[in-house]
Length: 162
Image (cartoon, one colour):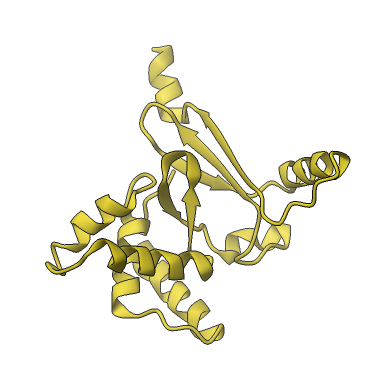
């Protein structure tokens, strides 16, 4: 579900840096380290877990260090916050959203495994349209939409059937 390794991780970091430069933003070494940790995590990861890992390379790192980096990464659309878990996941990237016409500010839909914690981002225009229509029908004008679905990932569902 989540978690990027090896060459894929380096390619994702290079794409993130290029996206920041194209927007006139800078992916500093600290921001890059935090993004690397988020992307490498096999599941959504909380700020304090990131801080613990960051301290291996930056012993003086403090919570504001991580929160400022995460705020930047959120603003740039490089990570998403999974509210249910109070944790962060790397965005699958604008190229993955090209089919649905979304850039870095796309509707967020997450599938969260309640057994192992694996979290996947999906982009389904039908879900976004249904939520938007329900909001309009209620006289509500949404500014941002995040859908979080809890259940079992394929691996956990498979092991539950055995």
